Image 1 (cartoon, rainbow, N blue to C red):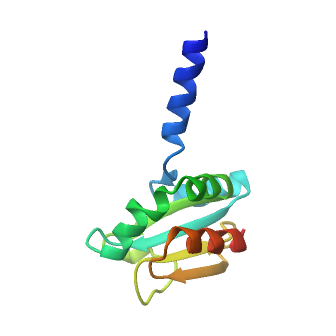
Image 2 (image 1 turned 120 degrees about the vertical axis):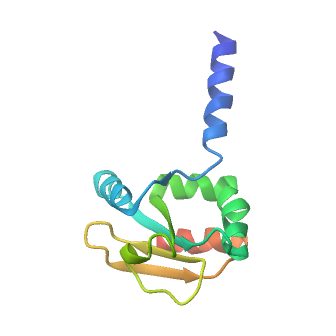
Image 3 (image 1 turned 90 degrees about the vertical axis):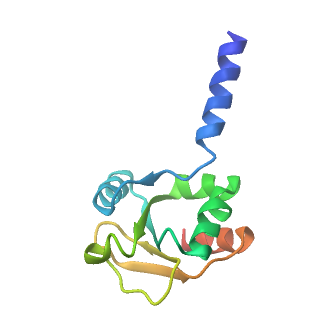
Length: 127
C-alpha cells in the first residue's frame, strides 16, 4: 500500500511540473468559462529565442506551474500558424495576454521574456 501511494505521489508530481496547455483557443475558452478561470494566451513561434526560453525555463518553474494551473487556463498560439484566429494584435513575441474567457475582455498583457521571479509577480498581480 505504501509503495502504491509513493508511486502515485511521484507520478502526480511529474505531471505538475508543466503547465496544462490546451490544444486550441476555443477549447481553452470553454474550459475557462466552465472552471471560472481567466485565460492566459501566449503568442510565440518555434524559432523565437525568448519564446523558447519562456517555455523551457520560466514556464517550467514549479511555483509558476502550480500558480498558473490553479488560476488560469492556458494556450500557446503560433503567430504564423494561427494568424487568422489570433484574438489580439501584437507588436512582438512572446506576448502573454490575460483575459476574461466569457467576453475576451483583455485584463492585462506582457510583452517579451522575463525571469521566473518577475513572471510570478506579474501573474499574481493579474489574479
